[in-house]
Figure (cartoon, rainbow, N blue to C red):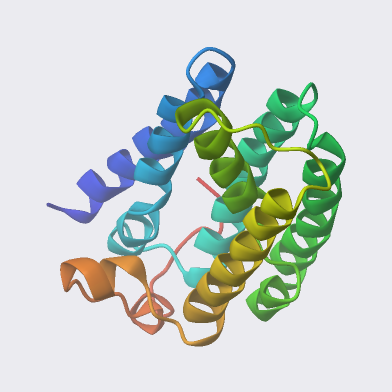
Length: 188
């Protein structure tokens, strides 16, 4: 595919990432799946379209934050809402700081615990039919697992620079290749 084709594809992915979160209220698992499906390859698509890392990083953090807002809205009537809101605030601080300073290592200190915790909670309550009380040992286990998974992912992506496309599909993302391209700097 040509660079122009990749640029069209990243536009399609960006628009889809903006629209699909709305279905969380009717189809939460489909919304989660679509978000993961679109978020996983967008780094590779951005890379192939010639974006520089900093440009992609800002785009991705904005798209992620948009999705997180929908998780917060969906969770507002759940018993775990105080935890979700607290984790959202912590992550938002890291997201904005990282996007503004382009220092992605900050995300290791404000990991994406909220999204994993939310997914684990939904699986436990909606699919497994469990009742999860706010301060129950099981809820604390869900939270602990979310912490472990999110910190390990933040470390892998933002410190070790091990990308999904490289490790799973054997593709090659080397953001330094795009640093010499003549881009306008316009986000999309």
